[in-house]
Image 1 (cartoon, rainbow, N blue to C red):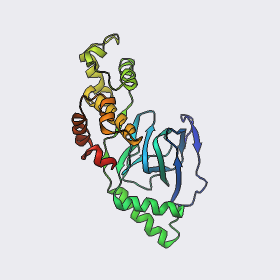
Image 2: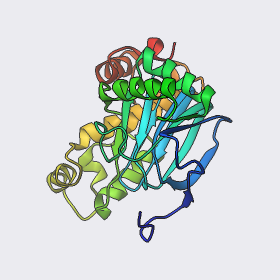
Image 3: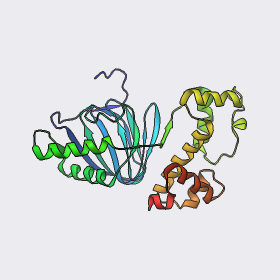
Image 4: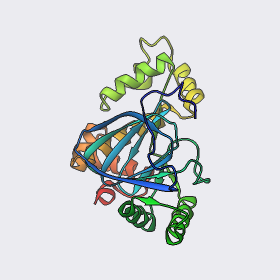
Length: 258
């Protein structure tokens, strides 16, 4: 594995023989795991709290009932919203062949959750041990069946888009239209709309909605009420926020975090 282009701490596995190794750790609210990367693929799951994973290509919000898939050699940071009980599986590279070679958020079924928690009590799974080989097979089977979840915010590189992104990231409640936000960027509304589509394959409206959804996730994980989260994220009413949340994730925020 080439490390010339990597930035961050190289967290090398100290167990090269096991197919899967694990880590269980509880983090305080607001804690940030600094930029690092692994020589193994990583499935990061939290039984409590919300994690925000950032790489060069995007930001992923990982609430309970979800996990983030981070392939080997991708530098990333993890920020905790609320107290986070993290449970992680480290897989030999390409052991889970069905999962992509880029980060994504996946659904965690009830069975996969129990498999993760059980594996974390064992610490390492080897194919040379027959019963562990069977457990590895079941975990891989569950990973083949997972569905990805749209909880990603792609990073922007064009300076005009970055300026708009910074304004909204600093205050999701900013009510200005795209045309108003474009003033001073050196590009008009139509040009910026085309740039969003070209650079990340997403409309400005969809990107803004994702930004608000991810901010709401963090607030709700920290114990905020739905009404407060809605207003802080720029929605005029809790019902409008709940409708957006339900459309994106299938259930209302009260049920999601309940």
